[in-house]
Length: 245
Ligand code: ZN
Image (cartoon, rainbow, N blue to C red; front, side, top):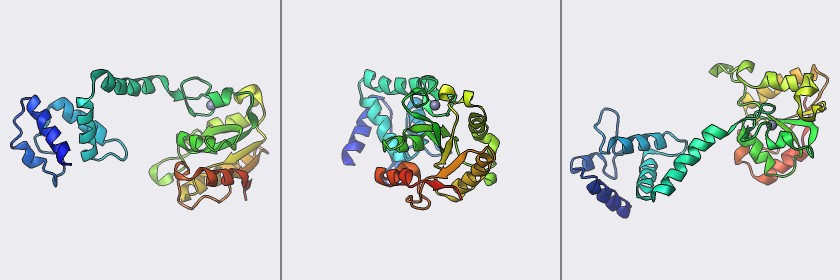
């Protein structure tokens, strides 16, 4: 930690910034250099970078400061490569018009792959769930990403998710890759209260269309998120899927 503070002090001197007062606001036991209502110890662009980094999941103010200083010390091409990667991702990555998976090409490579079983669709909440399932290598059908789950208390109803798009795929094979009719929908929602509620709602809608509905087996621990479950448990869950009751 000492080395890091030394480097921070050196950088501040390079900016010709008198930080003798500011150090008091950013002591090792403090909350960082900038707090609401306080004048920031950092030049404005750096303060903005730290604020943006700190808004990312899992990154606190202290880590954000460390990353910001790392970027300041890095060669310009290296630092700009990160900025470009973020810009390119936002510009080039879209949702697949069929399954809503994140993709640079539309339809996504999974929907476009003629080798996959297009009569089966596995429904997940988020693209990260799809990636976790795909990494098991156990599933060769298609997907449908709901982009969330029903949560009436948060104002998330069927209209906020891609449920209508899923039902259109069931009703009209032309909406499915290769115009293949969907024979089975596998519900792969997270085993949470809201995930279960969403699964029940979907099962009712799908059964009304005379399409088989199954769900992933309960090898998954209750309350777990698919993205954090081991590949082995996910593989069991795919193998052991059963009729929706
Ligand atoms: Zn797709």
